[in-house]
Length: 389
Image (tube, rainbow, N blue to C red; front, side, top):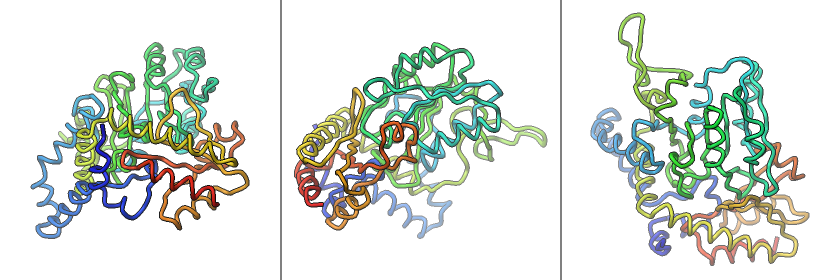
């Protein structure tokens, strides 16, 4: 069980704001803050290279922490600067050829879908969207019917940005394995919020960020690459870190996922990511998930009490992202009203998940995403303010 009082004591920002934008960027802990600032001070005192050398063991430990987080081996982890970079590195490493197929979901994030369309134009790849089931999540039955030997990639957003559903990632993994397709999971919203075990999910590739539910600094991300999938991938670019120049006419790639990294990175941010992962592991992902889930359900119940409020979350399993609208009130007006009262929410718009939002007749939604340091009292305050908009 989460010690909420202790969690809030270790989170400086909760004294200044009721933060319901954790699916955007969560409030960092004091431990993460101190880790980043302390290293920046060392860089100022002794130089960037020298400070990095002093931190070498701690930097190496980040891979082991990330491996524990996802239940994989440290050599299957690449540390990068964002979830977008991680996802792009994985997707553009796939050797596409005309006639290959990509299967994806209705609620796929815009950045990912734009990449599909680019590859379709460039290589003659076919992009097919799997319909939702009656609960609004990807239909595993339809996926199985659509999958064949031409499917090169099954690509899924675990938790879409525009709602509270958790897609059935493990069931999708079984279908991808049946047809021998690569399976890429965008876990940007899920890692740090709920337990994510790549051995259970069966994904070959997984991308995630540090800034959201992991509570790490911005400019951090993770890429998981299953060891047995490496031979099917060719990184879209290499440098002297991802590969070794062995003779004037040849090079050798790094043996593991670190071939997807580059030599230069923000050392302070990466150390902060390690601290954030270690803290999440110490709290316990099961306990974090229990707390986040219960707070989100409480928020949905309270929102349902407002006569002009409509909650728009879908799925058999719902998570810490709560999306809603107030009849006749623009989402930006709601966000501005709450911000003036030191409450943070975000706005999810149709272009972010165009297919799903258009199908549902939605142009925009307010998104309030909870974390374990939020409280029932903050939820009560949020609902009271919404009643005055």
